[in-house]
Image 1: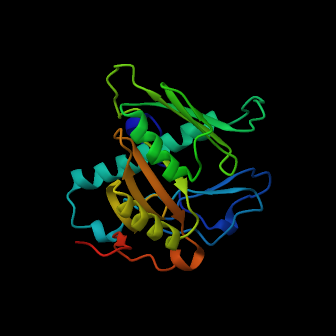
Image 2 (image 1 turned 120 degrees about the vertical axis):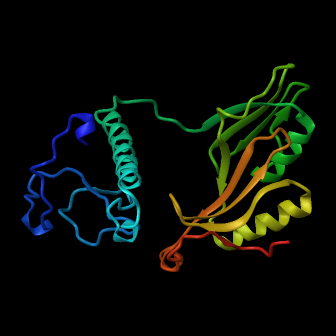
Length: 237
């Protein structure tokens, strides 16, 4: 923190019971790898599970390595706070009824087949240049468009995704994708880092990443392994 000009030399850890909760409008907890059980007040709460840079298990690290871990947590925390600050007093916006996205693809027929499979709806319309999908269930208007000879890059659009609701549905999607011949980038598995998910990663015919996922329920979260290694949900070759 001193590297950023912030002096925390006088700060000390204290019990939640010793904190004046009166007037708190937001509580942010930072307990590593778990949700902090103690609640400061009835104010809304965010949980940012940053790893503990002072973890005794890291005592064997040299000073430079330990300092780098502290810097990493500091920078992650600062980035989260910057987003939080940007979300304060956001002016009133529109009242959206539908989400619309349009992407260019190198092979329109192949993409039309893939997204009909993924979204579970037939195209609303198509021409020689584009195919339009409208999903009332997803409140989405999605369009695929010919590339017009442009070089398509995949470093700006990270991925598209759909929530299928359960682990069993993710496994079923994996089997259906394999049967359909779609490119499977990462097989169905349960991952724990970041947001714990059951997830399957595909690649559409144009090379875009597609995530098919389901959030974990409380019982599934309780099964998180200590090492947080991903658990495959389908047999591996």
